[in-house]
Image (cartoon, rainbow, N blue to C red; front, top):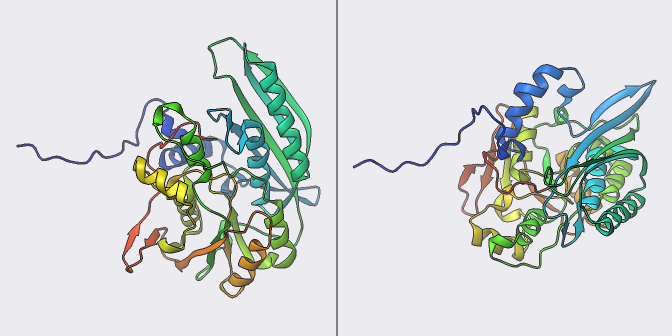
Length: 347
């Protein structure tokens, strides 16, 4: 009798797989083995959501992102809002004040003009809320059946004040980790809107620009904030692993402290998924000095988008790069970066 064995993930491929875009191990492998290898420079080596650049004596943050979410419209937002908010949040994670955006559109022949108007209108509204200007862009139209309706690329520029330095390299022992809201909302929302998955939920996408949270933190305790990161593709687990690997630290998360809504929890249980790996589009991970953790939490909770913020863990060691999840009975397990693709085209 042949023993049953669990399949091991395959990491060596000759062609691009959907999982290469999932924000997990294959994404990191793709970036490190191809893009970092051939584009290598001091700015890429920062391994941040935005490149931090000094230009004529001024510190700026520069980022770019592409959005291919399916469906284009979903409870709580659409691809246009997602594009603005996602790029703004990447700038904010460098401690920058967002200033300018570009917007590039790849549109499939036959796409309804009324849908394009709605998406562009929502982008304008989201940009106004975030205090950022869309100053340049591009439009390309491709033949019918050569794309999937609409893709958007955005690039953003923000200004970093000279006294602010946000980087994974600043992480140190006993840093406290805060998550600014409930996890898994966006991923669960997208799951619920895809017709073939057979369940319904009232969970909405959490897509939002988080200027209020970051602005308040930078105004009150800028020196004590070490890392800001938005856990989008790959969820909380993959993002924590990215930070642990860059900073060369061990992280411990308290399972009971994780803020998870009933809707997200129920959907994940039904589908056999883990909220830790579900995408988010309106929360941040904040690494803050231990002595300032409660002050940071209060600041975040007093911000518009931070009502559900929780302290979820801390940096426990500076020897390795492992993330542990501590259960209610004190048991621990390692949570790794996502190895496959839970759901393609999540953002």
